[in-house]
Image (tube, rainbow, N blue to C red; front, side, top):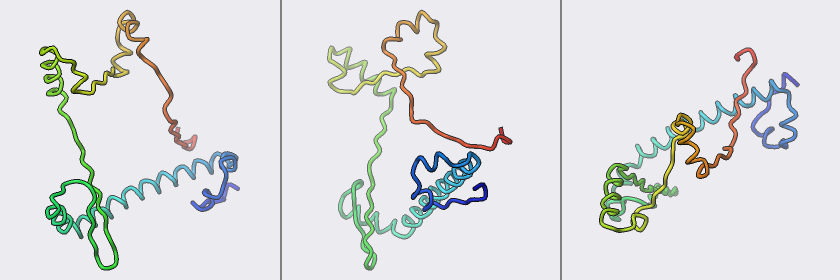
Length: 159
């Protein structure tokens, strides 16, 4: 079984238990191949999307301009192929300016929460370096839950 090479279709057809029962070296090989494939697909998608922008960018901008639509879905027909382009908007807020506006709202006697969603957080590295007396004041507001695990398999020779 150590000489066995699994193809993506083989992995797809195997159960979780069957994959779990594979020899460790084969698991490491599969993990490496999946990482390589994931990177390749990500790069291939980016390159292909750039090619679509190159091929249709002027037409996309013209359709958006004619529709008066900077965001959302537009369609372009190229022969018997329809290209649908979904451009969502990404809104970023200047945090320093929002903080200043929030202070003015409070100074005017208004409730800042009526205008701005406020979320408080403390970087964990900062929290861990606080004196224990300060940390104790915040402990009841802090909860720690595990994130999704990340796995990396390597040969013990690389360790």
